[in-house]
Length: 322
Image 1 (cartoon, rainbow, N blue to C red):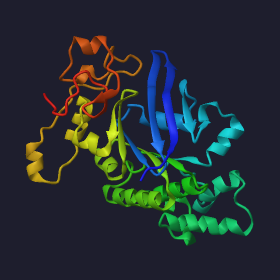
Image 2: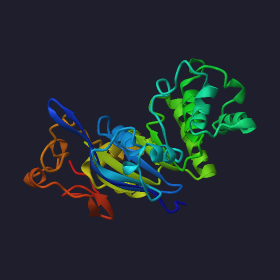
Image 3: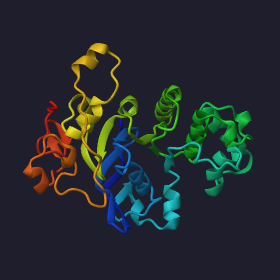
Image 4: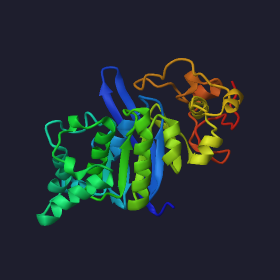
């Protein structure tokens, strides 16, 4: 059961200047996260999910907006304050092959956060590292090996152990299973669910695979071209999606039941996502939407309650039409 609010993101914006103009990677995103809760952030590649993750934790400096962690303003924190905040706010990166230093033994990789924050002291240090290895299902005796001696799934477990070293309260998971074999993904998802239950962690779980998000998330936020376009509880979004983009994503999720596949209509979007340096006027999804009208080009739809949960569509409807 989710507890009190631990993270609040308010109108967070991140623009990148280019020769073509400003790339609006994240454009006014707001959400909250409670203790022990998982918010699944979904959307196709290039929509701004990873940029949002890095901006929340201030690996990237925001252009505007605020991030409030447990009542403290992350966006206004100085270097020392930010270092203290990162004890409780950690991230696991997408690629387990690129996120681990190949020249460091994995025990040192997991130990490094403890050293940086001066928490690796005396006789308590080595047992803590061994405890972290066991926590994520790895043999502590293997901590003197190098990353290349482990499989992709094992490397991601090492990345998770490193993130948990400082006993954080919030972990941002930036597509933690997308680079893994399908057979390994469920193991990592089950590990994350167990760790959340045992440690009371809150997750911002970022993915483009809606089937994976459904296993772990309590609430879901759908992102398109830098903006949130639908949010709600897992059941509300998966059973009663109202935004055409969300409906198209869900129509592509594999269904194991042959009868279910026959009854569901696949929604195929036409064209590519627009250039984030030159987004369409009004609704950003209108260039690929089958419901678009002149109103969609003239007026940007607000993210507001429509049919029971927030959706940014003038013609939100629980029944997809094409």
